[in-house]
Length: 156
Image (cartoon, rainbow, N blue to C red; front, side, top):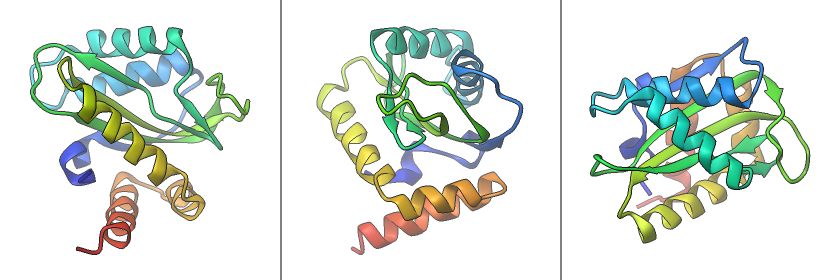
C-alpha cells in the first residue's frame, strides 16, 4: 500500500472541537468530498455512518479506520484526522479515539479493500508511529510521519 496514493495534503488534518463520532464522520465526508472526484460529502458521511452501525471500526488504542464502499469512483481515497481529544467510538477496548484514517473504495474493490485495511491495521499497530501522529501539530507533520514510517516499512 502506498500511503501517498490514498491521501493528499488537503485530506490530512489536525482537528479541534469535534465532539462525537457523527461529527467526525461528517468532517471526513467533507474532506473526501472536496477531493475533486465528484463525490457528495453527505453521501460519504452517510455510508461511513451506516458501516459504523454494523460494528465499530475502532481498532483500539485510540485508533479507528472508518471505511465504506462508494459507487462512482475508480480508486481508493483516504483521509487522516488527528483529534485534539479523544471521542467515544465504541472501540472494543473502550478507549476514546483520536486518530482516524478513513477510507472509501469503489464497490468492486473487494480484495483490494481488505488488503488496504490490513495494511492500515499493521501501520497503526506501531505505537511509536501513533505517538508521533498524536504529537503532530498540523497536517504536514502528519504526512511526514506517515511517509517516514512507510519508507522504513518498505525500504525498496
